[in-house]
Structures are given as structure tokens and as C-alpha cells.
Amino acid sequence: MTERADDREESLTAATEARGLEALVSRATRAGKGPAPVERWNPAFCGELDMEIREDGTWFYQGTPIGRMALVQLFSSVLRKDEDGKTYLVTPVEKVGIRVVDAPFIAVEMDVSGTGDGQVITFRTNVGDVVEAGPDHPLRFVDEDATGGLKPYVLVRGRLEALVARPVMYELVEHGEEIEVGGRRMFAVRSKGAVYPIMPVERLQRLSA
Image (cartoon, rainbow, N blue to C red; front, top):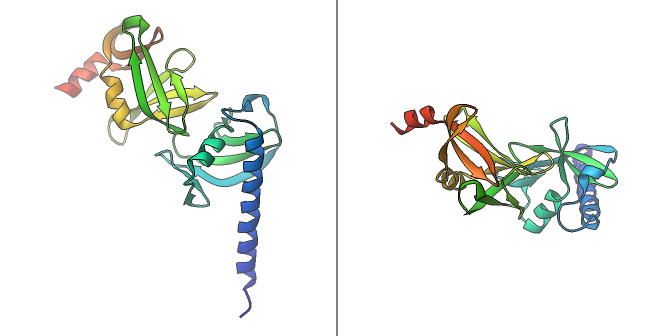
């Protein structure tokens, strides 16, 4: 039985994309360990890659989850979000677009040390980044219209954020306190001398009633 032309074309396309991914992996590996200096690189845009980071932080390639954490960590080290709001994998010689449903990273663990203005909140992401919330890594809280709840994010590097996982969010709000911000009483958290409002105190009271 002869192979249909469109089947051969699909096979060739898949093989070409696979080889392209392998080449990208090779170049990303040569970029070095840890986050690469992607902000200093300005390579040519080479098109879109069929890669997506889902809401739960799972990476997919051609609709299949990438099961190797080492590979996910490698790709995350060459990730960059540009002013156009799009996210790319960047090496010294190429830039390819990928899809991100929400945030590229998930904050899966947190630690709190100190108290008051000396309090420091540290997060660990699903790909191994460790960041201390503060002026260099601010927190922000976004209303989640679908549930009426909140979605906290912490800036990891560049324009890349981590969505704080729900169990970690519950732990985070346990460290909240009433603080006056701009003349208004806010329920907020502190870290490294910065104050991050979560919601107005009156809204918290309504939710607690």
C-alpha cells in the first residue's frame, strides 16, 4: 500500500519540527546553566513553535506534555516576555514564539522569615527559581472574575511572573495584616520593606461576614 501524499507531508512536517526542537535544545544547552542573559540577545524571529505552557504550569509540545523536568527547566532558562506581551524562547541566534495560557511559572512553595518591615517572603517556583518578594520581585493581586477570588503573582525575572499556587496563596494571606496605604486601610502583606495590598479592609470584612 502506498503512503498518501498528505500523510507523507504530515510526517515530514513532524520530523522537521522535531529536528528543529532538538536543535533548539542544543543551542539552549550551550547557553549555559541557570537563567541565560536573554535580555541582552537580539536574534531574528524564527516563527511560532507548537509549544504551550498551561494554567497549571505544565509544558506541552505538539499537544503532548513534556515529561522531562530537566528539559522544562532548560527551556525556562531561555524564556523571555517582550514588550509586545508575547513570550519567546530565545537563544543567541534565534527567537521562537510559544503560547502561555496564564503565567509561565507556578510558585509552589513559600517561606517567611522576620517580622514587620524586616519580614521576607521567599518563593520557589515549579522550575526551581527562588525569589524573595520585594522591590526587585514585586507581588501583585488580580481579581479572578470567574470565582470572585484572587490570583497572586510574583515577578521572577524580566517580565516573567509566577502564579502563586492556591495552597501557597492561602499560606500567604495568613501573613496579611491591616496597613494604611494611601490613606486607606488595606489588608496587605509585607516583604523586604515593601507593602503589597491584597484588598480593602471593608471588602475583607464583607467576605468574612
